[in-house]
Length: 124
Image 1 (cartoon, rainbow, N blue to C red):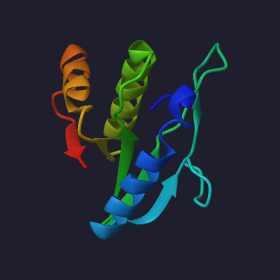
Image 2 (image 1 turned 120 degrees about the vertical axis):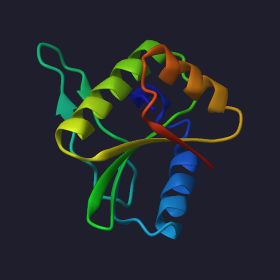
Image 3 (image 1 turned 90 degrees about the vertical axis):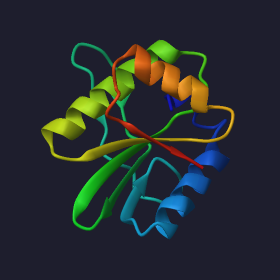
Image 4 (image 1 turned 180 degrees about the vertical axis):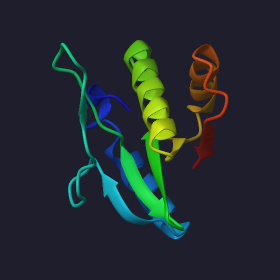
């Protein structure tokens, strides 16, 4: 999710964190109050920063999660997902999208548009 949508989707973020905790993920970092903030990455030549919504570990492997919810700026969301996917491949992480009912079609259309067929979409 992009920075403009953070306040709007706080409930979904907390539900996603509790879902991941129930699945056995630990060392969870989230871009939310009460959790340590994941590392941010700055785009060179501008002041745009990219922060994954949730970073967690399970069985010694690190995962990056991003909430996939309808947005007014899908182009910015596409570039964020492409960057996080590339970063996760370079660092041998796993990148996943978390979505909920009513947002799944939006998520699958965007991943198809930018050829992110390998990214798994988790439904809540």
